[in-house]
Image 1 (tube, rainbow, N blue to C red):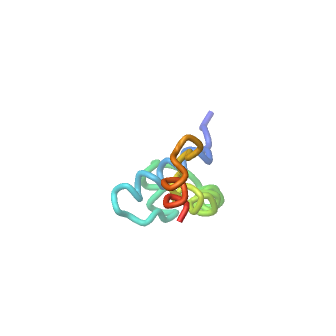
Image 2: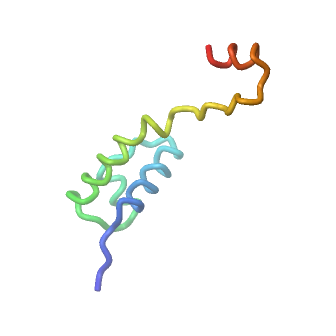
Length: 76
C-alpha cells in the first residue's frame, strides 16, 4: 500500500530547498520528495509558511542571572 506524504515530509523538504537557496514551491517539493499530490503539498506548504515567522525569530537569551546593566542593554 502506498504511503502518503506527511506534514513533516513537506516541511523538511521546504527547509532543505531554502537551505539550497531555492524557493519552496509545490512542484519543487514534489520533485524533491518524488511523490505527493499537489493538493496535499499545497496544504502542508501553507502550514510551513504560517510557522516560518516564529521559526525565524531569534531565541531570546535567559537573562535572569545577568547583571542588571547587561540585561537592560540586551532588552533594547
